[in-house]
Length: 215
Image 1 (cartoon, rainbow, N blue to C red):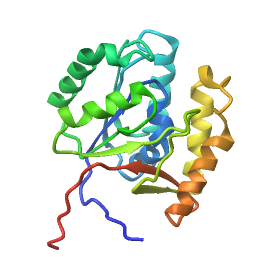
Image 2: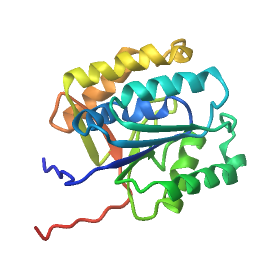
Image 3: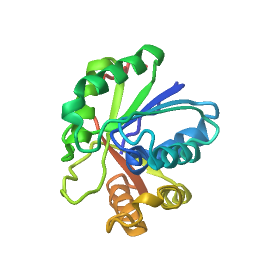
Image 4: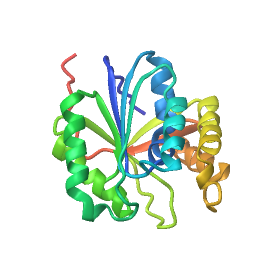
């Protein structure tokens, strides 16, 4: 399997429709990035949960998932499950984030996610970040919308285990959900690892990228 390694990576934007989306979809990747690049700038924008206990969970969790990073977290108050009716507010937030950041990579939901909030946010990303590499993460759910990803980030065993530990530690409000458990998170990571010729991995979907193979 061919791997491409960026020569420079100084900034990451992480986007989520809900508190815990980023950690579920790309928590292992954030742990890997921050461990290898002390001082990495991470700007996170979450559309819902602001002013609730979920915001407190999210801030503590992202601090744990981004150790040593220059982390900035913004949590908005859009109502869960009603994103299409609040398109303008989300669009304005993305454009404001774009004005103050120049990321090398964006972690966001994928455009064909079955949840309308995830899907709506994903479709907004290229309207604000037109010349950036956007990696669409996946979130296991009842809808059964897992697809065939094209990009993988292998995870060391300890990183995969740490991701699960942090998810269970920081998002107490989600523990009652039947799918929110160690087996689900490690199971998907194991399947994606098989596809990536690794033990564990996180997978991403990419709509467009350019190559520079001049050498």
